[in-house]
Image (cartoon, rainbow, N blue to C red; front, side, top):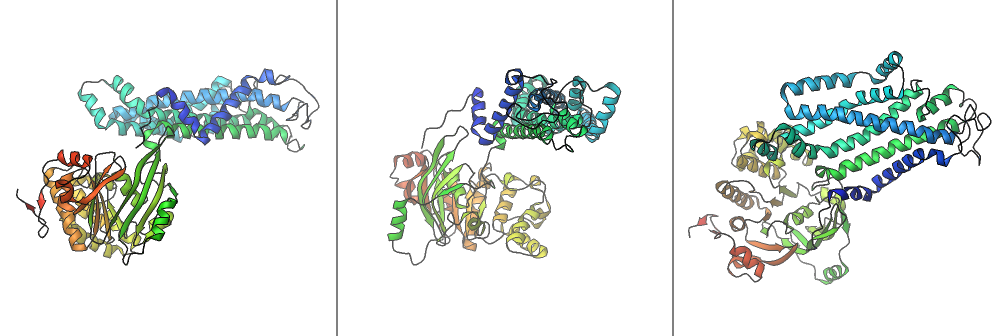
Length: 586
């Protein structure tokens, strides 16, 4: 496997953002906008209010953007007007970030009465009609630049507060925050060291997006005649163009150029804000189970030629993985070869295990079978189900077998269920979706399935958090069996369960596989699990299969040094009677 990429330093976050084409374009546009507005005196020979020619003079070499109703150069006004629009947008966004950050973080962290009061104020501010209120304030206190900034900032903070409050509430309940609290860390230090780093990416992204909103609002206010009359901004240019007859005079340039400037800068802020949130917030990066499609490459020429030359089997295996390679591109842009030329097959009712230490590529291989890799993955090889290449069929081909022919028990039973729906509703869902079963028939089948896994029918009306870990794992198995699949993928199905429950779950899988004639592909690093459930296994190291055979042969007569170390480090593997499925006493 390629050497892992070095973790980027905090100071290199900017380079991550600029590698994204969207954010690179947005940042370039914003940088250009700031540069030309700051350098306006160097780029034009006129001041913003200087008379430069005839009224509504058309664009020409001397005046590329034409002249307005007072004979002033439109290009000069766009450059100088950008100063005010950008200044209002950035300053108002910072005001909103400060107020919204203080309110949102305080409400989310302290909760209780503080949360109730602060969120009540936020909600009332949020429902206040902004433009009518600004008109009233401008009429009462005037429409100076400082007043415009304060109005926009004060009316823009509730969105920031609500977003941050929900994120902080989630962070506050995490185990490491509770641990720090037990250690005696005070609220101020807790927020500074544990909470703020988690919500800062979201806060930065929200602030950048608020800049776009503030520029748009300033333009709207100026268009309504509420801008500072002593200053030029893009909004005041649009207002003057309408108010002084530019449209009726056919002087489109007096209106179009400031409008385009507003649209381009607002779009650039949106692109940069979205990129910052995506790059700096680890939870927003593309995970497994993403709806985005990964890249599939053709099978290597030598493997394709060998497959074509090989005689066709009378009965193809139920599931075959052939010469599978998977590469992953990390955030720094480096590509890692995480699965290397992996091949194995399962016949009907076979039970096969992929064994290896964490990071050896087991779960990535398993996810490849159902096409559940993230979009930063690149895949080469073939995954055949009953002779049909699922990878070649794309997402549409994968969708025809997911859960109907090949189902999966995911690692971590709590993550397999939605917390807002009952267990029964989630077991019923695949039957109604794939089999077209009626609500009553699906409910009856669900009751039968939970009975098969040793649970009472009453669990169908309970929520996942109301079940123990072992009960949730049994329910997850029942959900996987809902559409009578022929292949069951099991990714570490006994994670976080105690030893007794682990054995019960494995024996349950073994019994169901026998009774329902299902092939099982198990991923685990627990060698005892392999012996209890599977007859054959393959050992993975650094993305490659290094040895394959029966579990007994791998344990008693391993050929590869890594296999000997792996099995030698394990506790004695129990001997299972093939007829009864019971552990034979040593």
